[in-house]
Amino acid sequence: MLTKDQKEWLNHLSDSNFIKITPFDPKIIEIFKSERDTLKSFLGSSQEVLLRGSSYLEIQGKGELDIYIPVSPKDFNPTMEKLINHLGMPESAYPGERMRWNKREDGETVIEIFLIDKTIDDWKNMVLFEEYLLTHPECLEEYISLKQSSPGLTSRAYYTKKLEFMNKIIEVAKK
Image 1 (cartoon, rainbow, N blue to C red):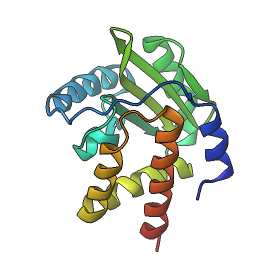
Image 2 (cartoon, one colour; image 1 turned 60 degrees about the vertical axis):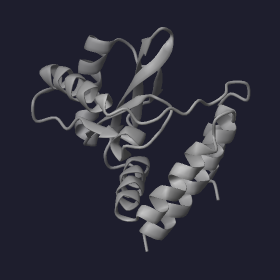
Image 3 (cartoon, helix red, strand yellow; image 1 turned 45 degrees about the horizontal axis):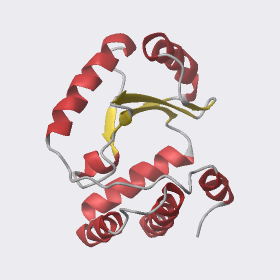
Image 4 (cartoon, rainbow, N blue to C red; image 1 turned 90 degrees about the vertical axis):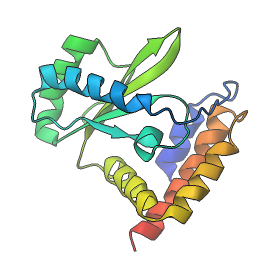
């Protein structure tokens, strides 16, 4: 079951862009470490900079590296200012909650950097979902199957399937 906010978010996605799924590439870990070190060079060495998403799970995905910078509400704006000074304006912004910067190669997004308030449910649920998959291999296999069946789906259709699956897992994980 999708939430009202999820339905609204899905409505902004494309029905003409199609999803490509690529195998996990172990080199992504080294790329992440390099990006993490660069981010920490101006955010401070104590700032959490985390690998998340399919790369964190070491499974196939859309070929993007998802980097998250979780912060407390009081640190959101100061961290945002540092990121804007080094990365430019974000491509997507929900002020005070989350912001996204994209790095591209050949016109394709290869790295997504997210600043996120670590107290919001979206962050807590994503962490819960991914950690649950890592400790429940049968659910991880189901998620892998979902991804394997996704090439050729539109962005909206893919994310609808993905969110429905995530919601199901999160509901079980919270019990």
